[in-house]
Image (cartoon, rainbow over all chains, first blue to last red; front, side, top):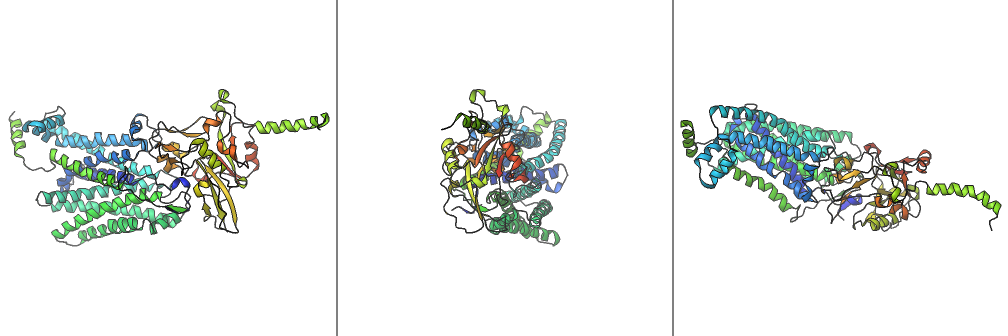
Length: 396
Length: 242
């Protein structure tokens, strides 16, 4: 029997699979990476500048994948456009399409385009063949890169970033609201859910950019800018402390209040969710990284060890946040709404909502990122072709 | 042999009984006016014997796939003061009845469950495309030609009444036999209940006996704290029922 105790007969089958775990995880990375990028742009934290463009491209890569798990999960995926055409305004989920489009089109794409416009125009002049066609298309017909035009770009980019911060909050706060507004499910139904989702998103986004930046420097055999990674790690620590504080507040509140759902939730945390919640999410994914990065802030740790610690902590944090999404989405479906029984979730390996697809969806953003970095290099290194074109443009 | 005198004495009683019988019976289809009805159901717990007739009738009437339930019956056993820990079972949704209880003493009773056709239904609220809808006569329906199969409604229903149809891949639930009640018939489960434990009620019909029943009996809805405006009214509902 796949369940213990009493489940309502229709509850035995879990409705939201691992793909719905991937969805908030991926959107969280988008929001977090963007907020890290805005640190440099809006709050003038110049130390994190080396990660600015990488953070933007990371946000875009994950953003492009974000709707895929939802699409694959739908029973009738061919009807998904109905959500845009005839949205039901009282539904939190119906707003996904609009929040997504707003964030993708009006924030991320626009900011990246404005930031890269000079390079795109120059590359459209200096490259040949298919590359030239791509860059010409990317200019969107605007090849004016005079000082005045670039100044306007910069100002507009700043405004877009400014709008982008509340938009990032909206994007992921909204994902949290999808769960937090389900009054039928006490594991989800809490006003803290959007806030917890938001801060955990920031944590995961900052962590992934930190790890990606260090990995890219290693691959490119370039020195890691320690001032940059130290600052990013600091922001990671502060955000994580707030996130962990909120999560603990939620947990302590549940334990102290101990309403009728508490026995079920307590049982799950000691059994089916023990590994993913206590060991992965709280132990390895939260307490260990907070203590390690906190230790680095207080004591003088050699550079080599710091680098190693940041890489390990970054990876642990990403795994921990994925475990947090798992515990929310899957954990919230493991107990009966009668609070009298528990079911189990066995994920398939090969199926439309199986492990392989979930893994592919998690790898896909990195492939997109590699392509994007090829087209729009995030590193501000001198490129002879660009410089020559730039000089030519200046001579004009 | 009924004499003329006896017949005259019986007629008023028969007229009263007839009025009772026809009360709440909807008109036949051509006259059916959706704005004149507001459907719900009365579930009389002391009358339910757990025979599973309702579950079988529902499955046959609505082609409910095996292993999924538009309605089901739960058996409760409450041994003592601990209302929060009843022993509950519902083998195959009670479709084939129940084996003898393994518990002795305490109280045992059956609870038929179904969609509560809530006035403020969470499932309708969350549907991203409006495929779950309220009819003007108070029934919550799913438009299977429009449903995306996102299952947000399944998560939002506090009563576990919804499922994803395994072949249609759209959300499904009790339709209160809408195809029957709009033709003047009652639901398949009510039709087949041997004890009258289920009664279709029309809350807009002043002649429906439900109005008198609600005034004179102890009636409760499931999970009232969730304020869904449930219209499945349970007579003599025990506090242990979840």
